Amino acid sequence: MHSVIEVSGVRKTYGKTVAVDEASFDVKQGEIFGLIGPNGAGKTTTMECIEGIRKPDRGTIAVLGLDPFRQVYKMQERIGVQLQQAQLQKRIKVWEAVDLWASLYGKKAVDAERLLEQLGLTDKRSAWFMNLSGGQKQRLFIALALINDPEVVFLDELTTGLDPQARHAIWDLVRSIRERGKTVFLTTHLMEEAERLCDRVAIMDHGRIIDIDSPEGLIRRHCPERTVVLTQDYESAGEHFEKIPQVESVIRDNQRFTIRGRGDDLVTEVIHCLSENDIRVTDFRTILPNLEDVFLKLTGRSIRE
Ligand SMILES: Nc1ncnc2c1ncn2[C@@H]1O[C@H](COP(=O)(O)OP(=O)(O)OP(=O)(O)O)[C@@H](O)[C@H]1O
Ligand SMILES: [Mg+2]
Image 1 (cartoon, rainbow, N blue to C red):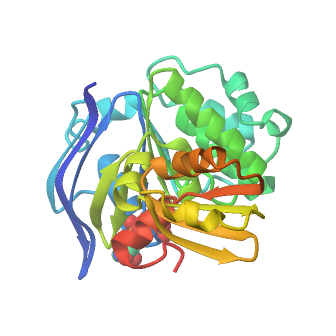
Image 2 (cartoon, rainbow, N blue to C red; image 1 turned 180 degrees about the vertical axis):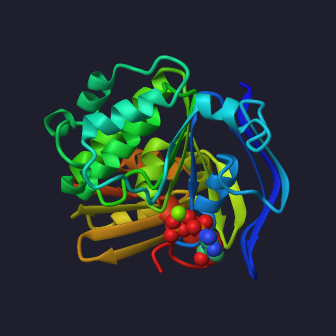
């Protein structure tokens, strides 16, 4: 699959602040690519350099083979941008904003009514911008980013401020963008969002990209630990669990056992051991590491700090 975004050795400073430090990565056609990291990591700056809004101090960037500076107009026809902190006139109506945006593009826009419906904004089509809730504004900005049926969509913190239900609806929408063969480049500091939505993620901290892979790949490589917690009342079960090769520790608390080990086989081996020894369990849970654990492992800090 070919790359639609190519970033190589990009550095961007604001005075003494190094916002982006030698960032290099590729985004492939048709994938949802996430840039994740804590506040101030450099995500928005990186994204805005790619969009041609900011000029990097050095490094090269190509979007759809175009230079975001020298070919900015050509590029803008083919991309869609949702900014992290955008504002519109207070008294512009939802449908007017959509109409205005559609008129900015040379090619024919998508079916605006359908787009508003997909984003749950049909009821609000005649509402003023200033009377929309935070989540509705957010959804309007996503609609505006999609109005020109772009090949690449940039979404900065797309679900910040949305309730869980709206968030899931937006995730579905982003997946539907991918299903139509488009490429999505997004930033988030929500690890769950990255894990559920992204095909690949780049982890960014202090302006540097620390690692890039699929969420599963990152978890497998950096956090191979697995934990099984189960409840059973067979007296010598602990001995059986300890014999499983992948097991590193077994902690017992009355009838509850916490079994720790590493590798994807651990869970299967525990289940196998239970069935082989005819051990009946009343509760069985697995605890798997997530991207949050990966970030902690790579940086020594929690992403929320
Ligand atoms: N226009 C600017 N002038 C000066 N410093 C800036 C400017 N924009 C960003 N910065 C600084 O650059 C660094 C990276 O900021 P950036 O907005 O790219 O981070 P981010 O990862 O998007 O953070 P967030 O999760 O809060 O959106 C921060 O230290 C920020 O203070
Ligand atoms: Mg940001």
